Length: 489
Ligand SMILES: Cc1cc2nc3c(=O)[nH]c(=O)nc-3n(C[C@H](O)[C@H](O)[C@H](O)COP(=O)(O)OP(=O)(O)OC[C@H]3O[C@@H](n4cnc5c(N)ncnc54)[C@H](O)[C@@H]3O)c2cc1C
Image 1: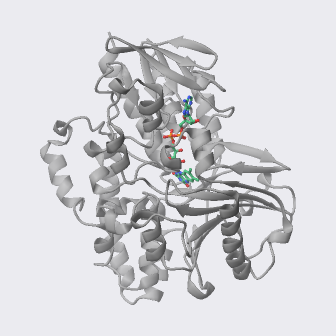
Image 2 (image 1 turned 45 degrees about the vertical axis):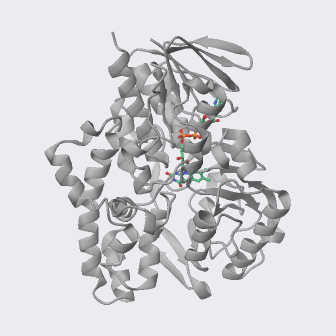
Image 3 (image 1 turned 180 degrees about the vertical axis):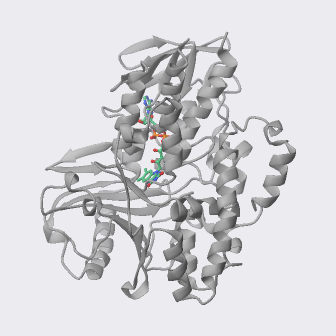
């Protein structure tokens, strides 16, 4: 079969590689000049900036991916485990460095709340089970029919997964110390919703982070993309860059052509890994959409982000590789993201200095800084607003570091809603797709198969299993499995 994949993010690359491996002729059409989607890279003045993801969690998912094709992760990039995993900066600039490994973490928690080491061990025992069932079983369900979930074993699992309890109330059964609660709730923020709105099942994220570790691919996160691109090309996938898809042409009940600005490509199957809403709204005629605008408007989106990529011409002693500025009230910031969307009054933010681990991504004696403020999607995005927030967070960062940094910034680029829209056709300028709330899980997510066009499939962070690098990669493999099952012979 001739398969056209739209988009070269993790989901598109995974789908294309898997289908090429099964013997199909696969072409990826990517609108940008670099592959990788939200995980693109750019180089400026001797700095290498990863544009999106910076946390490498769930190394088993990547290892299994490369093993599926007879390869090893180390054939493509070298991983190092970070220790401390990250720093949390609390009110009054109190700093907690999270050590790698659960034993040391248990000791740290015990020093903060008597009796919490044993409780942490019990929490992690339950989280290990959730990780096993969640990552080895649930996320591999295409979620197209309730029957996929109707096995005695799975139903038994559901009862032990705490699907109907919120993470927030689950964690409070183990700990009362506010600092421990903040630390334990952090991985949940990756799912794009608050701990109150996230099922307790996702304590599997704590297992992923704390037991399996926080890793870093030397050279930067884009090394993962480079590895996946090499593997795709080894399997025969053709990746065509600067191909902005304008239309999916449908004849009868089948997509037969994908049309770009400068050409057209015939297809037996189309896999759309670009933002789901964009595909429905801009690439298809209305009558072929799965969901109308009302549906999309009701979705709870994960936050967007205001980002800064900074080249600094000195080293900043106080920063670690990952630094979470939790020095303001998270409840207020969360309210301003989800309940009453507006630019945050006192934002929490994240500062990454990967040059602490990797000399190759900054000139000698310099620091590579990536700053991220989670913000509501669809906000007014102007240069003035971006600049205002730059100074708000730099003020706090400088105070924490005990030195001036702004005067040493030799390269600066900001990135927010407008860029997400123009670079990725992102619905409402979203950064991480849909929030993983209970009402947007599995069967309740936008489906990965078109209901009206027989040979059209969707993949990526807006469909199953959800946002994040490992889920997007799994999404690509899932859709490839469905294509193979339904179209072979
Ligand atoms: C700032 C930021 C930080 C993040 N941090 C982390 C992290 O630390 N860890 C983690 O696991 N995850 C993180 N994520 C989430 C993760 O990066 C995403 O979930 C994942 O990369 C999404 O992959 P995807 O394949 O679904 O989509 P995308 O990466 O968006 O790929 C879709 C592709 O389709 C292309 N496209 C769109 N429209 C068209 C068109 N008309 N024609 C042709 N091509 C088109 C786009 O250019 C893009 O390349 C982060 C995301 C962001 C934005």
